[in-house]
Image 1 (cartoon, rainbow, N blue to C red):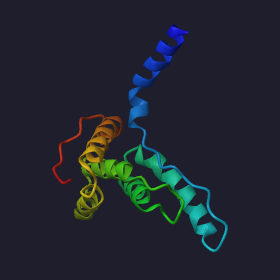
Image 2 (image 1 turned 90 degrees about the horizontal axis):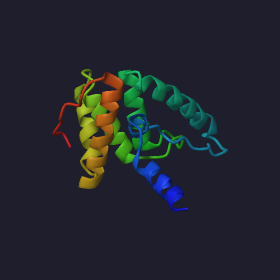
Image 3 (image 1 turned 180 degrees about the horizontal axis):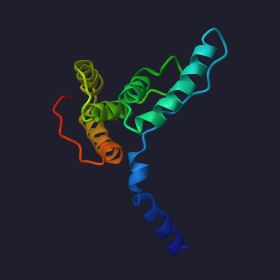
Length: 141
């Protein structure tokens, strides 16, 4: 029994780098009503955007960060830390605009220091996975 508990506890601490770098928006079930079709469209759009975002598509990364921040009409669970992580990835993409810098500040600055640290760690993993290089430090938070 002790060996089983030890094996299970080791599994908790041994997270593969691919798992650590995955930040995928959680889609919701769209509520029936007037906005159901719009919500369902966003669910499909976010799934495509996530796939492209991991391939380095700048527009798709912006969509993922936006949906994680706003919920995209009820289609996605809001996750400010994950949104901030994607904004940091965008800032490290080499294609960031002034608007991207503003979105980064607006999303990340209100977070607690612990949330910012979590976002930085996740974005480091994402930048390494997507761009195959280390993340450049940014002081915009």
